[in-house]
Image (cartoon, rainbow, N blue to C red):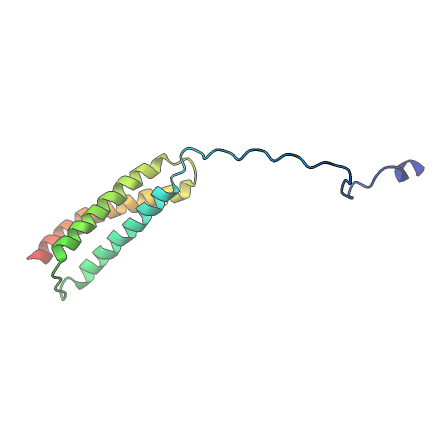
Length: 124
């Protein structure tokens, strides 16, 4: 077919095609709460780790600064809970936001159940 020989090869790059201008960067989307979710997860893990330590070692350990440590853990549990609730407003990275919410609520509930009872027993 002689007509096909005159057409350019579609797989060859264009030699005389000017480059296109780059589009502007998109604005930072609203609802990007990844940092909030990560902080909720980290503080939740610290709270859960402390309560596992408290339950497993409370019979044999003597901590001199236990009251201040426990107060700090309660503050961390409250921070984790509040940031976990804020994670519910995320529009991006929803899996991370869900993990932050679960971590925050778990830390708060664990701090109420084990922290108050275990802390009272450990202080006696």
